[in-house]
Length: 291
Length: 229
Image (cartoon, chains in turn red, blue):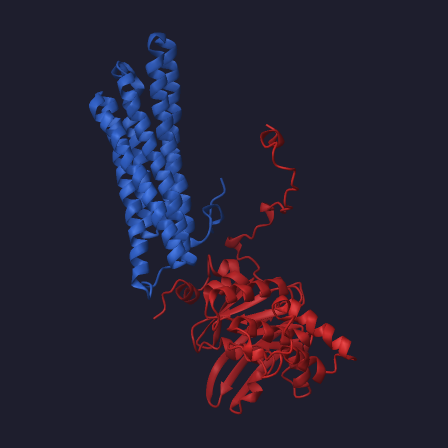
C-alpha cells in the first residue's frame, strides 16, 4: 500500500538522504582488513618515536599516522605514554629539561623534530587544548585575539573582530558570550572556559588540534558540548585527543590508538578496536580487565 | 581471543554470568520441551502435551528477563569488545531459544489431533530426528557458555543430518498420503512436526553462528580455513 494513503494527515516531508550500505565493500575481517588507508598522505606521521625522561624510557618506537579528516583518540592506562606522545606532536616536551625525543615526526612531510623547525610557528600550526581549562586572566575577547595578534594574522581591528567572532562561533561559544566579550575569561563556567580555550587554539588557524583530556574536568553536559564541537571541527582540522574515558574515545574518534607501558599496542578503526580488538592487552583494557 | 581474567569490577562478571546462566536455563527448558512433546506424540499422551504447552510460558518469561538484564547491563556497564558481543549474542539467542520452545508447543498441540498416528510408519523416524536437533541445541548452548567456537562449527555441520531426516520423512509421508487418503490430515500434522524439527536444527545453526561471532569477533562464513562447498 502507498504510504501516503495511510497517513493523509502528514505533509510530505522529504525522506532524509541516507546512503545505502554497500555490503560488497564491508571489510573482510578474516583477511585482516587494511586498517589504515595507505594511499592517502597523512597529516602527521610519527616514525619510531621514543621519549626518555632522564634515563627512563617513557615511550618506545611509536609509529603512527594521523589524517586530517579524522579524529584520532589515544587511550591507555595512566603512565602508558599517551600524553607524552601527544606532547611530542607539537614539541611540548621541549619544555621539560630532562626530556629527550628520538625518532622522526613529520607534519606534511617536514620533520618537526629538527632544530631548523620554528617551534613557535609549529605550535601555531599544531594547537593544543589542555585538561584543565586555562584561559588567560584577560577578557574573553583578548583570550581569542592574543594568538592572531602575536602571529600577525590580522591587519586591522575589524579583521581581528572577525577572527574572534569566527573562532568563538566555531567553538560554539559565540551565542553565550557575544554580549560580554570584555568580561574576564576566568569568570566563565568550566565548560565555557574549555570552549574558550578551543576558540583560542582555533584563532591562529591551526592545521592540527591536540587535546589532552579536554573533558575530564567538566560535567556531562559540558562534555557533550565539547564532543559535539570535536565532531563539528572534524574535517577542518586533524584532531588528536588523549582521553581516559573510553566511551568518549568511542564516541568522538574514528581511529583509536591503545598505549600500554610506553608502547603503541594497537592502532585501528575505532569501531573495530571497541568491538573486535586484535591484541589481548587491548581487549583486557577496554573490557575493564586490568589490575 | 581468550578472556584472561575477570573484570576489575567483580559485579560486572556476576552480571554476565547471570546472563549466561539464564540462557543455559532457557536451553534446558527448550530441549526438555521438545523431548517431552515427542514423547507425548509417540505415546499419545494428551495430558502431557497440555503440560508442555503450559510450561512454554516459563520460556517466554525467561526471554523477557534475559532482555531486561541485557539492556540493563548495556546501560549500566557499557560492555566493550568480547563482552559486548556476548551480551548481544545472549539477547539474540534468547529470542531463538524461545522460538524453539514455540515449536515444542506447536508439536504438543498436534498430539490430540493425531489419533491414529501410531499406524503411520514415518512416525518412528521423528523421535530420532528430534534427538539430533535437540542435541544440536544442547551442544551449541554449552558452546555459548564455554565461548567455544569450534564446537559451534561442528554443530552447524550436524544440521545436514536433520535436513536429510526431513527429506526422507517428507517423501515417506507423501507416499503414505497417496496410499492412505483417509488419514491425510494426520499425515499432514506429522509433516508439520517434521518441519518444526527441521526448523529447530536451523535455529541451532543460527545460534552457532552467533556463538562463533561472540567468541571470535569474526563471522563464521569468513572463518579461516573454511572449506568451500
